[in-house]
Length: 211
Image (cartoon, rainbow, N blue to C red; front, side, top):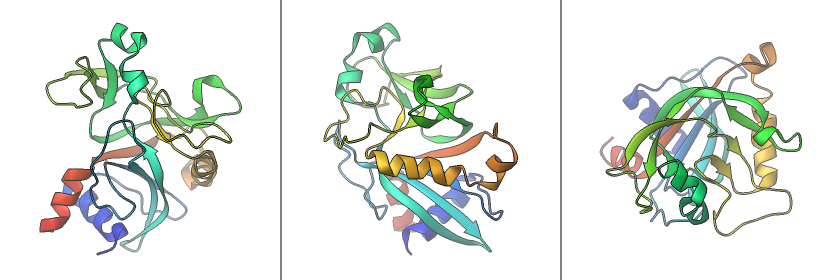
């Protein structure tokens, strides 16, 4: 099985919804995964997660984008005073959520992004161990899908994410946004709310080992 087939099989296994209408795109993030969907060590503060766009036509899944990103906050954000005030930095709960509209990250006209428009569950990493286990479940806003900055290729996540889903390379991020703006549902309604799945890379790999 290639990654596209594996991803569709996982969606069906989890009962996640996806669009198979023409000219529509589905958004998935796999945490702690390599480009082929295999699990990696998921080291802290690294861009070791995947941002994926895929289509489904006639039951066949096709990946149209698969790039490096982070689904986890960086060390600087984890240890910040801002995070402490909130009870810990936000670490998005695995699952699928319909919660993002096209807009601009922090309102900046030069930073197009998918902007969160309804609360989603997160874990508050109060003990700063970079894990969800035992952490308080909360509901948060401000978890955007954005990029870094033109001309930047950061090695560490650092402060680029305080819980947001962040593409590592700016050109890839712009392509991500351009592609989603071609989605027929967005063209029909520029207030369309996008759905995204955030997948545990270990769980994905384990499922595929027995699929």
